[in-house]
Length: 97
Image (cartoon, rainbow, N blue to C red):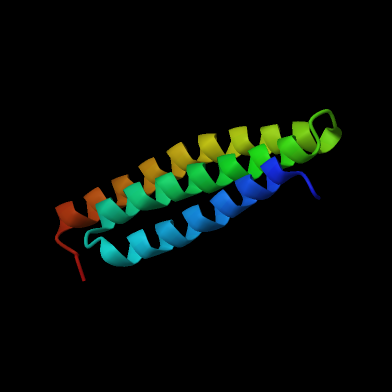
């Protein structure tokens, strides 16, 4: 893969992942961590999918990357909501250990 756009997008993916990992370490509350994890999932998934599309614009791998990206976006919303609800229920029951 010698496409400079694809390489730049992959570098963006790596930088975003490192920034997201640092963000997870810096924030204090579980709800804030959910926000960082949601951003991390969407940003890294989108830049990786765009890198695949930039490397192979008209191919089956580009279609698969788009399908995977849509799945990641959809599942990210569902899983983040489920985890936030579990945290809320845990806080309501008083079990914060």
